[in-house]
Image (tube, rainbow over all chains, first blue to last red; front, side, top):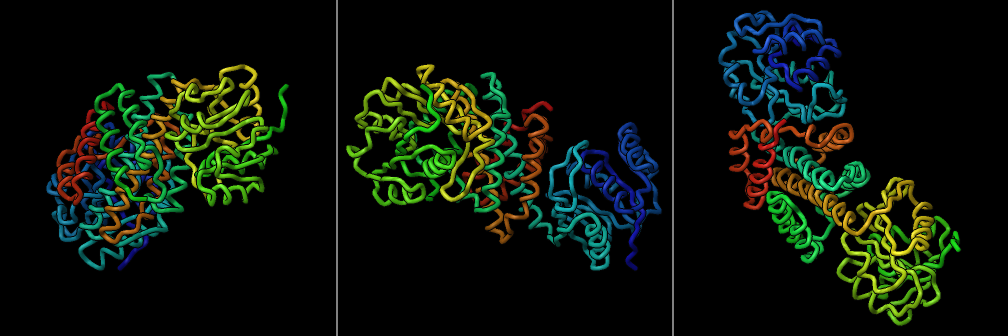
Length: 256
Length: 256
């Protein structure tokens, strides 16, 4: 039977664990316990959602309905092995780990396609949640929960989820790193990064209304190698020079 | 004397020329003529602002107050030489070209720090406009005009403008190129790029409230080399592999 309120154990106390467990509670789910190998971290998160906590994997509540493993990717397989559960539904939330990494018959993936910080509240309603299970019954359970928190729930298999995660690394981690470099260049010259905010806004507005390739501009696209050479000579950092070169080379090959 | 309405000649008919000349007219300036070496392009833009047009550099109106060279960077020096003007105020709008590239005594730079497309209206009010002149009197003229269209006018010398432009290439051209790759990866797997829009929004929201380095997340920051290797093996395109490697290597060195 598909219930509407589940007893949930949260495993992990990082950025995603903070945001997701608070959101699940907010939507009426019953978080019974937080586990983390650091007792301080487990306690800190449990305070936020007013539930039990433990740092002893053997003391994890065995009576809950669903176990969300919200740890780093590296830890998922190991924790899944150590959890001593029977007939329980165990779910991870990683973009790149296969569903089958979970050792239990009843397994699932609940992958919110978003970047999370502990203290920045995100609006889950617009976040795509990619779900996958190995049984139809558990799919319905995960769908019920996902629909409570987002209007954008999609069934995605492990292969496609991995592709989406890889694309997200370019669109999020790597773009953010471009801002890191940009900020460093300006900071070394006592210029405030805020001067670029309107440009960054516009860059993002553009790709919403157009394909990224049609939004591409700049000296590399115009094959203005004089400017490119000048910038490479101006950059202090050798790694920044390398990055400037390889990206310009690739952009210059775009046929617009 | 500082007037409020100037007779302006626009040289160029590209994205910036379209946006800026329409905005200048909108703010009450008198655009008298558009020059472009392609008559069709000159005519097309002149229609938008209801003014004269020419493709003959010798027919450029000699009686205007200000000449805005809004061409590609490569063409600025050459056009400046060919313009046969005396005591006229000649201005370019490039991020990376020195003020002195303009051959006239009265020279200036009017650099709007933004990415422009012909048909996407931008709100000039928030765009930082970096201005530079070689006389105080002309500075006042450029300031008067810049203040009409933006609330964010800054005096920036050629050296700093070049630095800002270089930082802008990372923050705009290179981030956009990350979206190009991301889109390609998804497209090759029949997944719609729109799935990443909420993530892209959040990435940008984050760096407004935090430094980019504090907003950095992802497998490279966590030094999760297993995931990194997996992604590199999954990528089809050799250039994408190279870009993934060099960016991950640099991100992995961030001490967070």
